[in-house]
Every structure is written in structure tokens, then in C-alpha cells.
Amino acid sequence: MAPQAELRALDAVIIGAGFAGLYALHRMRDVLGLDARVYEAGDGVGGTWYWNRYPGARCDSESFYYCYSFSEELEQEWEWTSKYPEQPEILGYLNHVADRFDLRRDIQLSTRVTSAEFDESADLWRVRTERGEEISARYVISAVGCLSAANVPDVPGLDRFEGDWYHTGRWPHEGVDFTGKRVGLIGTGSTGIQATPVIAAQADHLTVFQRTANYSIPARNKPLDAEEWAEIKTRYREIRERTRASRAGFPYAPTERSAEDLTPAEQQALCEELWAEGGFRFLWGSFHDLLSNEQTNDIVAEFVRGKIREVVHDPEVAEMLAPKDHPYGSKRPPIDTDYYATFNRDDVTLVDIRRAPIVEITPRGVRTEAGEHELDVIVFATGFDAMTGALLRIDIRGRDGQSLTEKWHGGPRTYLGLQVAGFPNLFTITGPGSPSVLTNMPVAIEQHVEWISDCIEHMRAKGLTRIEAQPDAEEAWVDHVNDVASKTLFIKAASWYVGANIPGKKRVFMPYPGGLIEYGKRCNEVASSGYEGFELGSANA
Image 1: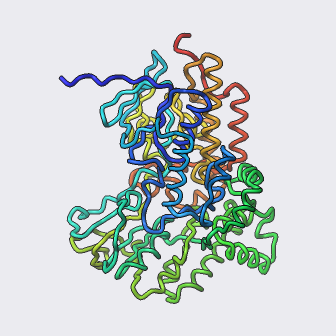
Image 2: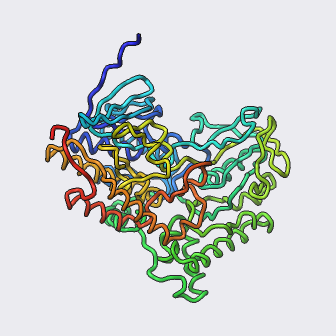
Image 3: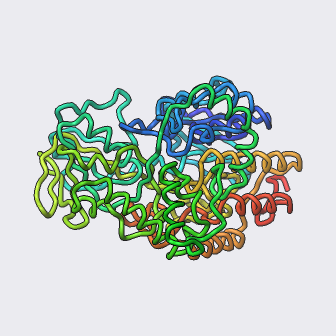
């Protein structure tokens, strides 16, 4: 009989060492003085930016506000090199944070959490890892990320493919050399759009398999020089205040007018101005009703389609690339560098797999209903089982042994995206039901971590050992999220926001589309009212 694993006792187990996990550890350990530990499946810190090393991987939020705001010293000492930082630089930043705040001593790498079960008699979680370790903890804090469970489509014949294949979310650390290769790229979401120009520049031939055409806005990336950085640093407080007071965590706001308030010439002028600037400002700095008014959205969407037709020389290819089946912004809105122009190359082919779907992977390549494409390498840019996938890959069991998988069988249900009824002392950072992926993520992460930290501090001051979302509060919040979503254009797209990219996944709009301002107000109201909607107690009561 194998010896029983020694039980380690902690105050808090944090799962994941990305932006959320690192800040959660800092708050739990250095602010609250808890005995906390991070368990991370990867061999290094970084979360999303540890795993996603595909060609062209770059943040689509601007560098100077895609970072932590909790430390003014950190803001002043770190300098980004470009407007949109590449993956290695973001990973370098997160490693710098881990070192600067001495976080590594409480981070256990190469350790995947496999299960967590709540002990009702003691108000403790029993957590197990794939190494066979067992840990007891008062609190479990999920920092697993919204986009971390890679989605490799179940295509017949993949095991017979004689070439190499890769998923962009699990890219080899040593990189991939495409020189002289015939490469097939499957997927044209944000990742595929970033990777396409970079792979095309190296490969002998690139074939892009597109199911859904996507609206993409030019990034207008550029280096940041010392003078620009000096100016940014003098107004960091103002920048942070603007991000926290915005709908989506960006330091700019949309015009107060609808497109319908302007003449066609004025509409065109505003769109041209935003297109020239590029990036997410085109979405979050344009018309206030862009995501709720179909007429406004149609004007903006047609503007983008017009730009695609201007860039792409072949009219037939341009029409294939011009989205017509969903409103602009209702799917994850990519930004790019030379994506559409790449299809003017003679060594790049676009294949419409909505018209002729993929049938199978053959030993020599990909066969669609229209014929076979011979390839040496296949790249799956097929995204993730978003919002819920990473959490549901852990066997989490709450009261009465109920599993989270059972609880979320009909779609994720949370209260404020922070807790799940029936799962006491389990906190989910940027979970479903919170603004999360509809925002600049570090802003949403900091708001969640600070709320959780304040909640635990309150509990400890009151001698409480248990907090759990009440079922009726959870029900009301789920209804509210659905009601807000129903008033937007998000619901008109088959996106990963609703799990449409995962076969068999229940279609539910998962993030909260009401914006950070309203969401933050509600979280603050709940806390100031003594945690309305939560039941607090003690195992000793």
C-alpha cells in the first residue's frame, strides 16, 4: 500500500500564476498576511503569456495600461518598448513582477491541480495535485484564466497526418521553423489574424482555412521612445483613473452621439479618424450605441468592409474576407498588422470552409468537400474552451459532493462572477458573469482581486470561516446578465462568448456586458451592505 500523502495546511490555495494569480498572491500574503501558495501547471509564471508563444503573439491593448496599477514604483521603473507589446516582453514583465515582489518562494511550478473538495464540517477545501500532494485551505482562489483551455478540434484523421501540427495556445518554446514548408492555418480569430502575416513571411506557401470572416482593425504599432515614456509616467494617475472610470477598462470614452445624429460625411470622417489611429479605440472610442443599435453598427461594419475591399486586390478574396454574418464587435474584435494585405501575396491561399467544410485530415494534408490541400505543417488557431473550460477540467466538488461540472451542465451560473452557490470559499477571478473578457483584463483582474481580498479581511475581522453565494442571489444575477445581454448585439453572433466554438457546449452568453462602471458599483454596494446575497458563517457556530 502506498504511503498516504502528507496533508499541507494553508490559508489560501491560488490556482494559476498569470496576471491574476500573481496579484492574488501579493494581496493574500503581503497585504493580509495569509499563508498562501500558487500552484501552476506550467514550468514558469505568466499564464496566458507563458503558453501563447505563436508567431505574431502580441497584446491588443496598449502596453502602458495593459499592466498592473497597484504599485506606483513598478509603473515608474518599467518601460515598454512599443505601443503593443509582444509576448516575450509581457512574459518578461510578469517575471519581473514575480521577482520584484518576491513571489516565487510561494509559487509551485509544474504542478497541476486535479481536484478540490469542500469539507463542510471544517469549512476547508481539500485540494489535490497530479503529484499526489494534498493541501487543506480555507479559501481556493481560481486564477486559471478565461482563455487557457486549448481547443483542438476533433477532426478525423489527425493521428494519421505525416507532417507536424501545433496549437497556437501550446506553442513549442523553441519556436517552429516554417522555411520551405507548406503550412495550413485553421482559424481566423484574433490569434489566426496575428499569426497569418508572420507565418506567410517565412513559409513556402500558406493556406488559411476560414470558417468565419472577421472584422480586424489595424493596430498602428510603433516603438515608444524615451520622451513618450517620460510623458506617460507624469500622468499615470490620470490614466489609471480613466481606465477605472471607463466601460471596458480603456483610457478613452466613446462619443456621446449615435451615428444617426451625424450626416453621412460626419460618420465617415469619424470612422476615418479612428481607423487612422487604430486599435481598440475604433471599438470603444466610437459611437456610444455601437453595440446596441443595429443601424449604427451597420454603418461602422460597412466602413470596415469597404477598407477590406480597398486593401485586398482580388475582389473575390476581398468578399470572402468581408464579414457579413455578425455585427462588428459582437465577436472578439481583433487588431492586426498587415493581415488583409497578406492575401495579396501569390504564396497565400484563402479557403472558405463554410462553403466547403473540412472532411478529414489525410496523411498528406487537409481534405475539404472541394478537394485536398497538401501540407507539411498544420497550425490550429482554434482558440479555447473559454471562460469555463480550465475550471471544469479540475474535479471541483462543493456541498454534498456536487461537482461544478454538474452545476454548470446547463451553462455557468455565478453571483457577480465571483462565487457559485453551493461552493463556499471558492472565488473565481474574472469568472463567467463578470465583465472579464469584454474589458482590458488587468483592470478587471485588479478589481476582482481587491474585492476578494477585502472580503477575506472582513471575514477574518469578524471571526467568520465561510462565505457562500445564496441561490436566489445567483439566480437574480444570472437573469440580470441575460437581460443586459439581450439588449446588445453580442447575442447576434455565434462566438466563443457563448461557447459556440465548442461542440456540445450549452450556448449561454458568459461575460457580463453591462460594463466595468456599473459592475464595480454593484460589487461595492454588495460589500458595503454586509455582503448582500452571500451567506457568511462559521464552522464553530
